[in-house]
Image 1: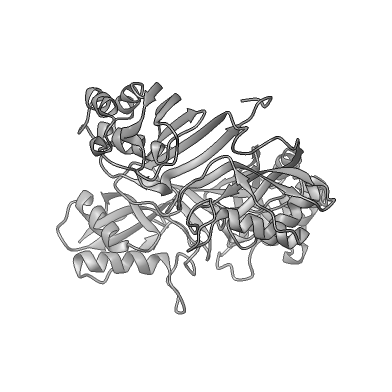
Image 2: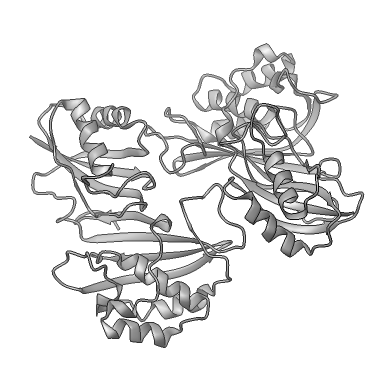
Length: 250
Length: 250
């Protein structure tokens, strides 16, 4: 058996999430079926993160163990041929050591959240952004976001379905910038709670609209109470950007 | 009657083109019906360019004459509400003089063509880029493109369905740049022939693959013969970026 690591790009729109679901299509199922199409093997694919329905990925990392003797370059091309027409593509493929694990070896995860901030709704970017018409103050959002950076109990920003052992996480970065008609939020941490990024973005959007301020965001965090969450942002604006592993350049 | 100018963004994918068609949906029809929905008036909308089926627009300019007394800001919001769920949005609306014409007053048009140049096909950008797997030499493409800049008879790069009086046009700019996995071609001119950008891009892609060189491109231009066209690029990578009018900043 050889362990292959894959870099995966996908449009989360048509999927019920990354992880296999009983009731609908998943990225994991697409990849596993494509590998089966190439090798005839029933493999189990593991991912750096379990993104929700509608959430996209620019460079998710996954791995699977394959018995067939095949070069990574050829395997990638063959998997991509089998993945069509699903909106999933393998953009890189390499052989990794047997103890390399897409989820457990991962030491850094990075997300981007895109808000389209203009009166008119999205056209070309429909399903790719969260549309908010009221003017957002990105500077106020960035300033407030800094109270969330660091090691905290993020219970307020955690889904009731979260399976993490602990609500305590260290948020390394939470930057808000305006790029023309869009407001971008970038979040980096070793790991995140379920819905954490979307919950932080939802509350930051209230800051951007002037309904919340930094103090209110800080007290919501300190409350450690999901009832204090202002708003959970929708999945379609969220992108899994990058997973980092030991020895890889950030 | 008041003449309103609209800036329009649209996803060309579901349309048979910008201009009204007998057999399928068009951007013009969507806009005219939305205006009818707001005002009850049967208007005729005019556009800076008549883009083909599948071609997108970031900022097309259109105009229509409307009798109803309504402020541009309110008109824009009401039209956008009526445009849903079509992937068309009015991003700006203003009152213009009665002799301002979206097509005939336009003194500059600018297009962007996006090529996704990697082995894996597009996922999030499906229908938004032309996928070409072989490595393209963007530097060679840019160098060759300069033989097309200037005043020429572009018959080789003109659709047989082109309705322009003359095949002679002045191409002001044709730049090719690499942006990571994408190759971008930007074209600017007062006006273009039908299929001119897609035909130029198609031939430049042959240069990028090493199948054509600058000399071959120059001789194809000089031949003034549609049979000398190497390749017509598909519509989905093409974006109408901007129309310029007298008195407006470039």
